[in-house]
Amino acid sequence: MINRRTFSKGAVLAAIASPAIIGRAVADDEIRIASILDLSGGLDIYGKPTQMSMQMAVDEINDAGGLLGKKLKLITYDTQSNNQLYAQYAQQAALQDKVHVVHGGLTSASREVIRPILNRFKTLYVYSTTYEGGVCDRNTFCTGSTPAMDEKEPLKWAIKEYGKKIFSIGADYNSPRIRAEWTKRYAAENGATMTANEFFPLSVTEFGPIITRIQVEKPDFIACCLIGAAHLGFYRQWAAAGMLNKIPILGYSFGSGNEQQMLPPSDSEGIVAPFTYFMEIDSPENKAWVERYKKKFGANALPQNCISMGGYEGTMLWAAAVKKAGSAERQAVIEAMEGGASYTGPAGVLTVLGPLHHCARDIYLGRCEGGAFKILTKWDQQFPADAEGKCDLLKNPDTNNQFTPI
Image (tube, rainbow, N blue to C red; front, side, top):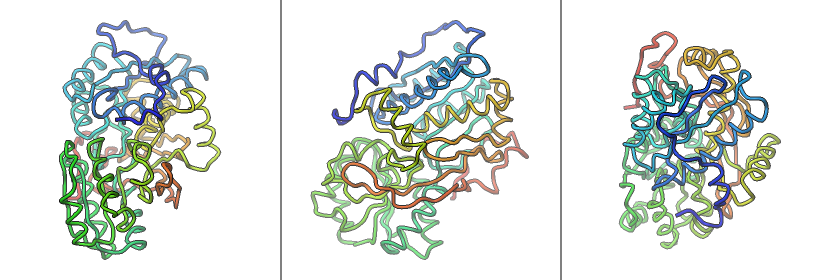
C-alpha cells in the first residue's frame, strides 16, 4: 500500500487521464505520444509517479511552444498491472491511435509483451526503466540503467567497504535472475564470492527462514533485488530480527518504488542503493526540477525515483531527437537518436549510443537516512556495456535479441 502521507490524490487524478478511447480521431496539427503503464493494480507504485513525470514533460514541451510547431497529445492507457492489457493497448496505440512513439512498460515481462507488437506495426518504443540489460532492437531505445552501469562500480565499492562474501537475494523472474548473474560476474572480477543466490515469488511475504540462514552464514553484505509491496516484508522482518546494519544491504531495487517512504527509518536506515536518480541530488538543475514538480502536483506528491523519472527523461530525449530530425516520423527519429541525441536534465546528461540504443549516464550511490537518501558518491557517464561486442545496430540493424551474461 502507498503511504497515504506521500499521496496527493488531486495531483494524481490530474496527471492520469482515462485510458484511450477506441477510434480516436487523428489530427494533423498534433504529435501523438502514448504512455502504457500500470496505473492501478500491484505495480501502480511504479506506474503512477512515472505517469506524473511524463505528463510534466509533455506539459512543459507544450508550454514552450510544442514540437515542430505542433502540440504534443499524450494518450494514456492503464494496463492495471495486467500483461494482457499491455498487448491490447500496444495494438490500439499503433493501429487505431496511430501514435508516433510509445513510452511504457515497467517490468521486463511487460516490455517483452509490447516490444514485438510495436516492432510489427513499426511504432517507435522508448523503454526508460532501470532493467537487466541486453536488449538489442532497432525499434527500441532503452534510456534507463543496466547492470554494467549500476552494478559494476557500486559492487566494487561495496566489496571494498564491506568485504568479499556476498549473499544474493531477489524476486523470482527474469530481471533479478539476470542481474544476479552480473553480480556473480562482477564479484569474481573483484576477488569476491557469491555464497548464495536465492529467489522468491513476488507474492512471498514471509522471509524468516532465509533471514535465519543469512544469520548463520554471516556474509559481509547482501546484494538485494526484491521487488514490490509483498517483498517489503523482508526489510521489516530483517529489522525485527535485529539485523539492520549488522549485515549491510546493497539494494539494486530499494527506493525504485519509493520503499524509503513506505517503511519507517527503523526498518530502512543505512540501506545503500545505486541509481540514475534521487530527488536529493544537489544540483541546480535538479533543485529547479523538484521545485517545478511540487508546484505542479503539490508538496505531498508521490516522490520521484530512478524508474519514474524515466517518464520525464525518456520523453525529453525523444523530443530532442524529433527536433534534431525535423520530423516526428519513426525512421527519422531513429536516425537522429542513433546520431547521438542527448538531453541534460535533473539527473545529468543522457547521450544515446547509436550501436547499442542505450544511454551513457551518471550513476549515484545513495544511503537511506530518515526516509530520504544521502548521496555518497557518483560515477560519471557509465557505459552500457552489457551487450557490447554482441549488439551493433548500425552494422546489423535487423538484430532483435536480448543478450545475457550467461
